[in-house]
Length: 93
Image (tube, rainbow, N blue to C red; front, side, top):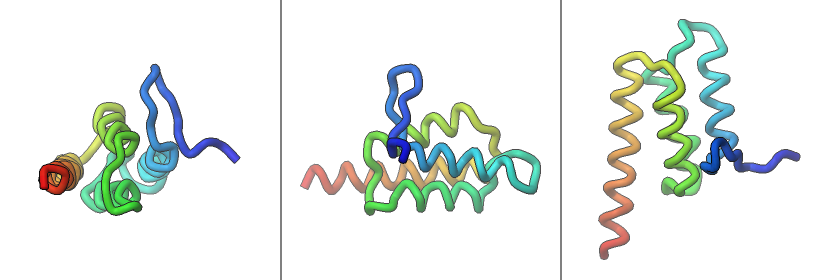
């Protein structure tokens, strides 16, 4: 069984999130991550109720390496930024 993590250029990522992104763009459609796909990726990343550093790295990698629809990129940015802000608020309490 492969490791749940994947290292690319010295940065550690969540393998299952990267694989999900690749599957989403390989299926039917235009090869871009849509708004619906962005929600699916975010739900996968939040499986433990928060974004770990590896999951955060994975989202940044996907945003850099994959093509998005305009609404797909906006949705992923919104979801990730909101989650990170909430985590920061919780950690300050």
